[in-house]
Length: 76
Image 1: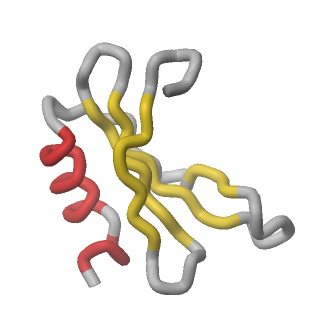
Image 2: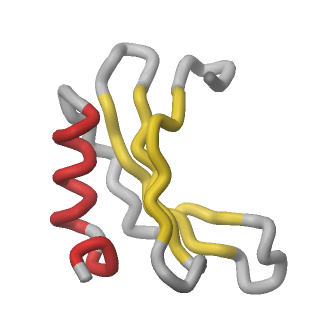
Image 3: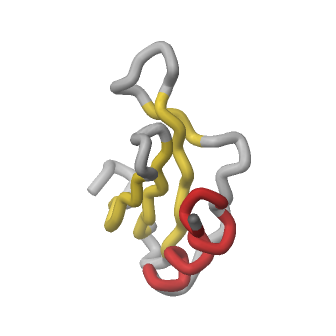
């Protein structure tokens, strides 16, 4: 768990290893997701995608479902 009370509860990575989505449990018990891309200059570094969502959801399943709907490569 991070200092701000957030905890990554799941990480979904694409087949190439270039992108991932973290499902995050927030300190208030709600969930969100953030899509990341691997940094081209430093393959050990990740950065959030510009279109990363800030919406929150009442459950891990709801955040996962939203990510599946919103992140194109997850639906492939």
